[in-house]
Length: 398
Image 1: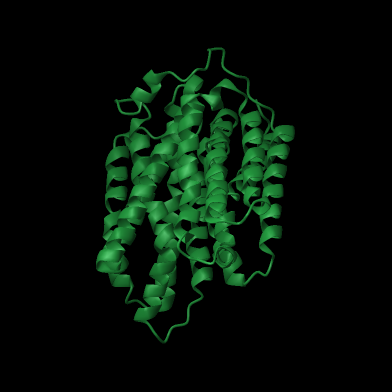
Image 2: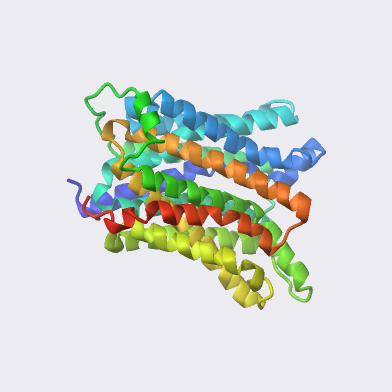
């Protein structure tokens, strides 16, 4: 049994390693202006971002089917994966700078991050079971801060050379992996053979203990990444409706997305008292109400609109760690890492569909507040999925 001080130190280490590793995901976003100049085109801008996501989907599928997170020690999987991700993140710097090399580098970075983000959640599930909702809140909060970070860099007008920025991010990621291995003892591999059973894959689509949380997570993912992707455009749209208002778009986007980290952390503490299912349901209802209110609040004064974006950003991201907690707690121990990885894979596949639908609607109709109603099915599905789970909330001592 871990003492309180050891638990705190190890949680801090895991959170730092998670942030350091997942910061590789958004490194390309931070240097998009430089990449556009180097490639002499903006045609591949969306693909530079999407390539990481597609790579992550491919990587999580392979990691899950090969049961890599369960057949090997999780901390070692994390370290090897983060070293590979950090290396391929720099790959394009040593090759002719062409769209194909940049996209290949971004794809491979996402691919190896499959051994970082979901594996970090497995490590938390293995080591912090009594406070898992809280631990997951900090872990996912670290990812959210990484997501928002490129907007902060742009908003502050950073002049750090793109090569130095990429090297720094890769170095930070490797340091995080090394610190994790040295300071967080690896949990023993369960005595079973730890090969991913295809019955477990089949179980994703059958009634199971973790199925409500999984469906709720899918609904959450339908909303979250599309909101993040179109948030800068939404802020610009608001400013167009209020020509006398001056808004720093990138800093506002950083604040709204970064608010999700606060939602994750506060939700983690609330889960210790209310249970993860109740917290997730409350946040889903809140984000759903934000979607419903958006067309009307686009006419509100700037201070109210800013507060609204903060609430929406907090609630849209804050339920994610609680769904991960529920899935991890109800999945079989021998396949926990693979289940978490596969559920994450399907969740990110859903984000691609949602983002592409919104992009198509924008081209067909034009951006407006009403267009974001396409995100409503996500919170609705999530609320319906966890309504029974809420009746028996996850105990903090589970």
